[in-house]
Length: 270
DNA sequence: AGAACCACCTGGCAGC
DNA sequence: TGCTGCCAGGTGGTTC
Image 1 (cartoon, rainbow, N blue to C red):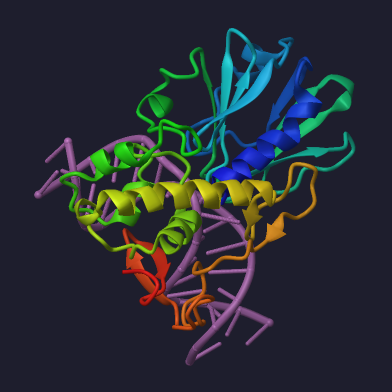
Image 2 (image 1 turned 180 degrees about the horizontal axis):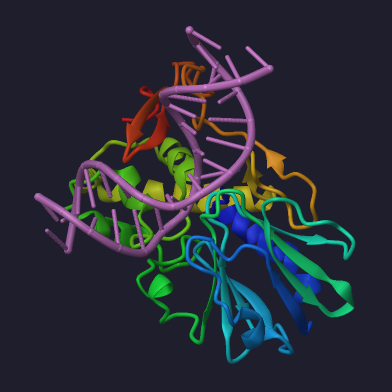
């Protein structure tokens, strides 16, 4: 579900109410997420103050000082605040209760998400191999160009690979390639330096715009405060097969790459 | 090392 | 109405 803008929107949505609060208790109704929720989660965290909530790629890092809780929302996860009398529904797997009956609830129908513990926010196996954040200076033309050398794989696959750059999911990969004028199936090694420059710029602009819009959202996303997220950021190509390109009117095409749908305009993207 | 494919899980929807 | 098949925002793991 959530792409990087949704995760960042969630982080910004929950941080003000949680920062500095002490965790009182945790209810784990179903520990069977992508990996089992640690049996000692509550024992490790109860009584500790939450110093910060950071983000690395699509992982949320709840910083409790000597221990860090990692939360990934997978395809269908969401975090929101609930009232103390709000009954848990079928897919509400974890509740964290902080001071003043502030309750954060994880809902994740598909259970591709994760709740894990670590003592280091960078050396954990899930984090150690991640590429740069897309919105930092580290992700630039020279970097992407170097990563494309010798790669026969399609450029869409390369930018969706978290080892290349984190946070570019299926929607924003198609959208970024449209803005850069590059077809998703183009072999990465065929990208010129100027094409890499356009793509880096497009990825940054598309993600920034989505964050500014509060995160686009499809079926499963719910804002941390509980209301439904924005349904459908105005996409240029994603999920628009057969519909006219908003720039040139040519019907948008859909192809499958790595078992994921890709969308592009055959005229605007070469 | 890189690329292709599979795995995990539920729900919504189109088509019959 | 009910069944079947397909599709969905992620990403680690296996195999070649």
